[in-house]
Length: 271
Image (tube, rainbow, N blue to C red; front, side, top):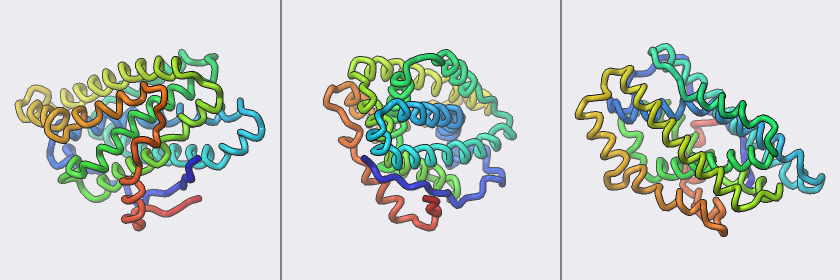
């Protein structure tokens, strides 16, 4: 079990931010904007899935998970609120969030499924966010040129994703979920997550008028596939999820703990 803490991020997102807030880099900005666009609807699904999943356990198991699930829900609810505020600024800049509508339609189709499937999906997406978070924390240059409040937002989110990376996975195991379905859902999530991220990033760049600029493609190649690049460095931890003996705790989390320890003025503890 993991001891989780709910925190309130101490930043103000009521003020607009620059159009290309990621150090003037159109590609980095478009990609991170796309990820943020997916978060509110996704995090609500995680909350609903974990809340319903824990209710299927025997009373003694429910008690074992009670504090962790309560804090997990608190963290995800805070992420949902912060990114909704961030996305509100993007909407005022003229961006259209198609990812959230696609995700909402898929979630609707899952109604009536065994709760284990919902939790398996949650665990799969949480693995994606955890390895992305670990990469961000290991490569702080991903936030080069980003104003302090937005740097704090993304790094705080990464630290908490690393912190609660095991919750849905452990709950799925406790619910009697098996390896086969865990991997099946993970493969489906991989297809949807990557294709949706690509589609929304392209849409964001098209809105900016930067889709076909050489600087955009150069930045994308370096950011994704260059030395220390996102895809280049996350492939192995992504693949590890398919092992029978996999557990999220095998992939660290210390960098998130360190950031939270080193930046106590960035947040206040709620519970």
